[in-house]
Image 1 (cartoon, rainbow, N blue to C red):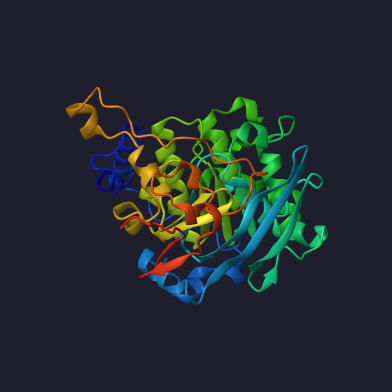
Image 2 (cartoon, rainbow, N blue to C red):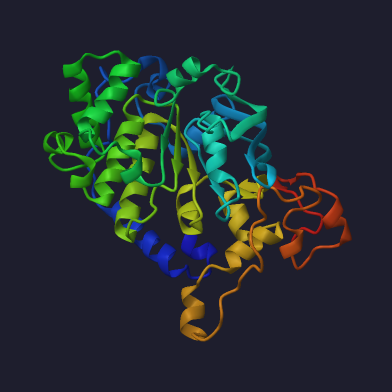
Length: 389
């Protein structure tokens, strides 16, 4: 649990963990199951398991043969007045069916740009994907034409953006926006697509879904708008869901409900999830594996328990040390929080050496001139010349 790894938990994450625990302890209705007529049978996870939902360990075991997305050496650059900047620098990762992969780091580390690059949503100009591959079921997304990638967006890969108020069209009803995606990708007629939209709103536990489908985004609360975004993202039964800060600007109780909703739907549909966040409490409670980004590069990757119990990179150690702890707040109320000096380097900064070296207390002369390569120890990857022992 996050509370254990955080030595008592921090104020926000502790409340989040408590809220999630209360939700999971409640007696639930039978498992969330979409109508079989609405599911894409060719991608149904239950067809290989006798019709029953797989447990989390079973889903994780299937990842070796059910790889959904594999990204290799992704490089994304932007042309700026200061020169060409590299926002994503040789980033590689993979995610399997039923797995939740967390990507964490400070603002400006390249997390959201990575997700947008996979879906080819980078505005050109000023940005462009310089190199790399992103294979989804054997097809390279980066090499696809605009017409081909539009068939993937919202259908095989769906994304929940940070702010639903700016992601939803303010002049169209919520139901129309969900139905539009269904008509486009599933080929349903207007009546069937509207029924599907209402079904999805009900699935994400929005009360009075028929009424809500007729309302505009500004008429819904922040939590309802985020649920509507999830309903839209899952309406075509995607293989991969990218959630970019899905709980931003929501209170702790609503955060817990949204995360629990994604967790339930993932178990029901076997969807792979990439969770982009800076909230370590969310990562500890929901993810199976974690990648730490810095300056557009992957600097550490490990199973969630291993990373929180024994971080290897000084940056990861600093992130964990900067989390407020309840035990410290009560025993030493005047003690200052740990902080990492400096800021994330701009994308136009010199890429030589370790980008974290100017802020690192363990840096040496080698760190400033040589870029460390990822090294693996028992499934724990770290790119550092002076790793934490």
